[in-house]
Image (cartoon, rainbow, N blue to C red; front, side, top):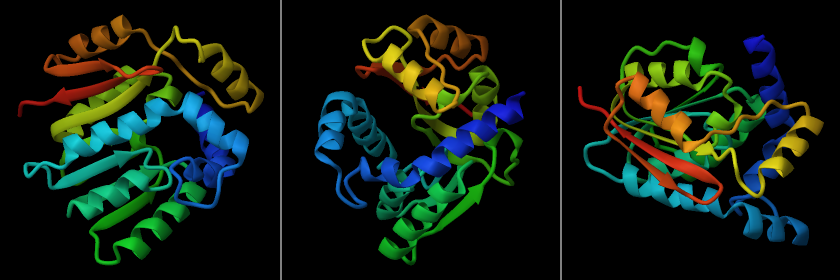
Length: 220
């Protein structure tokens, strides 16, 4: 069942890759409707991007794991900071864009891109930081994912959780159901309970409009 859900998510982003990348304004032009949609609905995406870069631009962070790296826009910024990056994603089309973006812009950057399911992938070393922006939207068992993140990360974990009760929740539910892609939403209490159960008690959970922005500080 979990594999089937992952396949649906992967298929959705295979077909959505080019359009998704254009949200960040780097690949092609957005239509008038697309630009209006971005302004109204995607403010949280831009805010999470800025918050993540502020947290990553830190001398104590050298290696970064980007889970659900998508089209590589975050990875590119990490490379600009001189970080060593590993990105993993289900969608091959996303990774093709990521490879093009990162290797053309920063040809000497230290980056590896992997197609696969993070939960089924084992790494040789831990990472100073792990980032998961927009990923928990598609995870049916986030507690299992958080547990693995804790094992794979040394310093900080950064992620975003879409709010359950939000003016745009129903719209997203309908849109993703039509596209046959599973999507999940969360309350603040649900997130806090998961973190407490996993003894990940040193965290910051910030209201970011349509979502919660999470920073977990690990003590190893």
